Image (cartoon, rainbow, N blue to C red):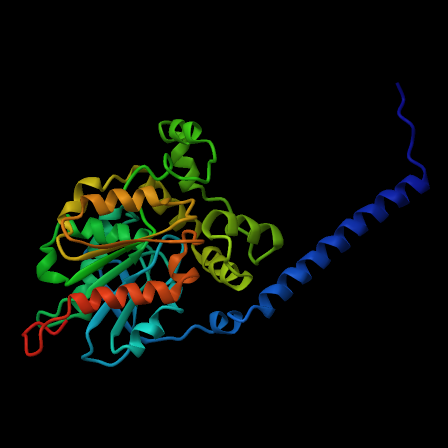
Length: 348
């Protein structure tokens, strides 16, 4: 059968339709970018503050980038960000801690930000624990014990570190924010059908979910923003917050993203949680789809010295971005509880 040949009018209609779609897409993009620019947080997030730079080499030769905020000699808080993030992730939290008299050391995890990619190609969670020990060693001297806090992978790094170190001799307290220590796929709410998530966790496909090397959009679009918002944020997150994280996600090298993701599919640190013997804060987001509150509840139940379990309402996986005041106040309360007595040899 011979198909009818398109005439000039049908060609013009098709071309006109494509142009209309393109124009509509451009309009949506302009509106999206305008909503980011109009967000009151956009100015602060577009120019995050920089601290005093410091470098340290991890045991396997990986160079880590650290920035120090606050006065030298003030009690120390060390902050470890999560997967596909950078130390600027803590932009809204750091000033609140510095204003209350703390020295804050935030560092880029291996392969992220200004830290080098893993010298050995090793992105196992145990290596992230080694990195934390290296950071503690260069930031704190003469027996100083910092408060260590981590978000997501940063918190997993703390638990992995605790398995192989004398915890109470090295740190005064710990905070685990929006994290899990195993079964990340099985208990994720990204897959909305629980039995399907459980089945996925038991198949080789689960490795592909977190270790995909696929590209991500080079700039924020209405579609990318909606996907990131659904996956990582709670319902009240603003456009500038989502775009701020999108920029970090884009900057994370695909091989690093994949290498860490593969390690996370194989991670099980449940046995290491009881080794975290210092007072420990656990925080979760009620709307966290990546590490739902069930993870926080399980961690809290296993800790020898739980300081407090906090589940933040209307909050997704990005607690320190979505609720910086609440996160900072919780860290300060933990620091106050574990402050060294006046005149004690330990200064933190």
